Length: 180
Image (cartoon, rainbow, N blue to C red):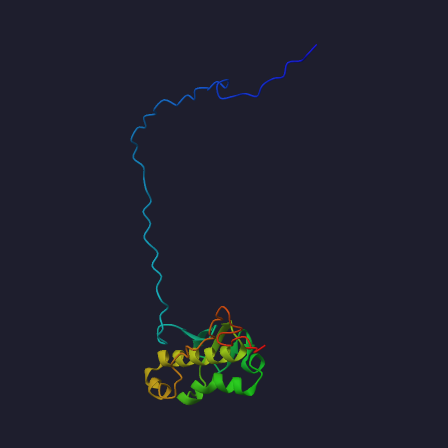
């Protein structure tokens, strides 16, 4: 006895079920209280020694960023990322680079510098810290600007590594040409 094979459902055989739409709901107008919040306005920190206990300044070099807090009352210490300057910048020239704006300004070591630095290499970090310290000193005492500006301690060195180009080995180094 042969068995009947069921045919798959086609479009004609599928019955469409009507989807009932909900009846329109009438909402009563209710007095809804909206909390109107005042927009948050971010203000820059006050950068005057008389009004604030520290001065904030930023120094950058290549990909290094140094955030300098200059505490006007202190023993003249410089700490970088929680370490003394001699521990963080172990090479003597790096320490001199960091201390150059302080010595050029003739600062009498009354303030303390707390620096957070990240990114880049150690030399770029040292130069970023130097720029941050110089800017903090100028904010504290505007007369120092006259001595730091001619020495180039207040200008950001904007040179960065050039990007690699396609078809070259580095930014400009082409592959070696072979005759045969």
